[in-house]
Amino acid sequence: MATHIPGDALKHFTRLAVSVDVRPFVGELDAVPGMWLANTSRQRNVRCQRHTQNIFLRAPKKPLPPGATNANDVHESRVTRAARKFPRTLAFCERIADELDATLGRATLVALLPKSQVFPHVDAGAYYRIRDRLHLVLKSSDGSLLTAGRETVVMHPGELWAFNNKARHSAHNPSPEPRVHLIFDLLPAPGCGFHVLPPGDATRAA
Image (cartoon, rainbow, N blue to C red; front, side, top):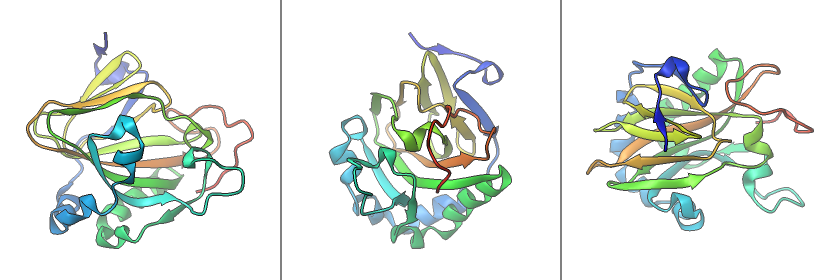
């Protein structure tokens, strides 16, 4: 059973900001509502994400390198065509990366549908191992429940969190409205980071 723990005592979560002005990013989203269904590969192919809709701003570089069977071990990323519709949103990701002396990786806008969930899973692979995953809450009428390990937090609009996606995690949206997050990955400088694992033979790449 997951336990609700005060933010300062968390192992798998780090709250980085509480009052980010998300109105510019929500405005970009509201201007192009049809973008949610432009690419449905994630909810079709990743079963734990089947209740989500996604807009990819930065994605794994393709074609995949020789020997790679999926994107989990691909370090290089690219700016997508869809990102041209979201210049302020992508600029925010780049600014946070600069402020934390990190390198921006993938970035995705994710809507978790009403009364649904992201099923428990672990983000495995060389790409995730050495990166921090950040969530900025854009829309969440009842708060966003995210569980990692045995910890559960409730995230609210304007809050920016880093969390350990290498731990088994899940998300729930009990509300009748979609829950929308900006999710992006940062490769920290050597010896830094919030929830990264030892790099092994991984290389520093974006």
